[in-house]
Image (cartoon, rainbow, N blue to C red; front, side):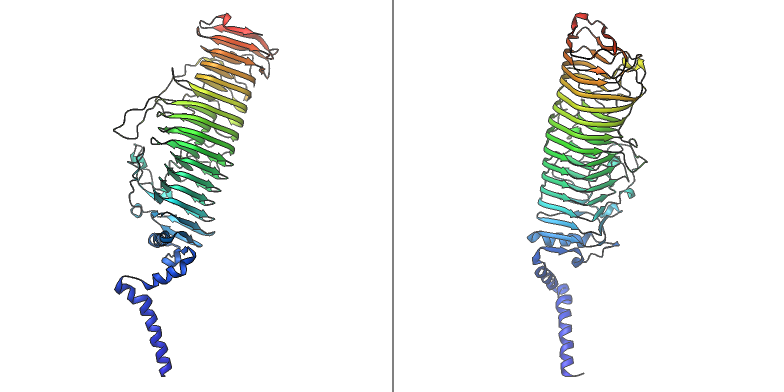
Length: 548
């Protein structure tokens, strides 16, 4: 060997020592410094940190190392094409995690790969929500983006008990962010969470757009839960879930406030658009528009029904105030109950040391331009409680087609109050009205409502019980000669019915019941198809009704 060749060999050995052996001796990798120099562009590839991306090796440490390095300066961590098996990943402020097209982040199927997490923020569920594939708390300026896929592999985490809260234990979310600010979740494909797909808790300035969610592998498979968040935009998303799809909650004293949801296509075996099953902090300034609700691709529900339970579900059951909710331009096909509004009194607490909350408030709601088909025989309901009415509710330009088939005697069914029940749109069973059952309301307005049935239904189209201030305009509905009445009023006052008519021959246009009914005015209605205009019963006085 010549002297020149010997020098080259010595140089190569020195390079190996420099970037290999020395870091293990001195605990400071010159290779890392070289990597940092290379990453001045702000892009950190998880492959450079040891990720195999083969779906077999656990890549948690490599992905976390890339995130930690990126957090020092801010930037982007990329997952190139491959399958990355991982346990919990802790996001950091000023870091964007991008899954490139062809990249899949796989949640580990071993619970030991998910360290227990207890957020500093108290909320209902903090004693049984402990695990997540992606987690962040108290962060700012973070993003999850890309054309890749996150698959939680949640079917591996079986539910072993029906008891609360045990049935929620040991099932990780896919995304869980608490008390974070300025968040972007964009374009990702999200699959198979062991629980809710996403839980955003007490976050601000959250944008979710263009995501595709398919979640049908376990119980409680929600699409997204926005919980006590402020300043939120959700747009252009696709969701198909076994449990609820777009869900707003308030599991603490913090409200959901200033939220805009638009241009989404949703499918659920349970409820497509829902708020208020936890309602402590309440809901304020919410707009939901331009969405399509359609049947799920999955034909075998874990819970609920193939076509879904509810389309639009607005509820308050644990105190708090719902005020200023606008729902507009929604096409609903499949759910058994298209519209459900409920003020209840379950009174659940989120801390053991807090008093039971008072009955909440539900007011200033407008639901407009809704077309719903294939609604079941349950009927839609909007109900408050005695001395706690729902207030200022307006329904405009609503067209609903029901299956029909209800019997005449069902019109006099005694509907229980059920104040402490879970607020599900089927909770009262088949209602005495095939269209809308309204109880304990104040300032309720119906305008341009069209109700039809596929099979003759002998129940009234509309029943209003204990309603003060009721305006009905351009109400058109199907009826029958066997039907008790097209509309029924019970103990209601200050009622104005105008420009309304039956779509076919009926026996009776209006039945008025109850001694507290008064101030009922009918004017400008088309009554030619009705054999009788009105009747009174159950203590009502004929003088309570004026026909002009």
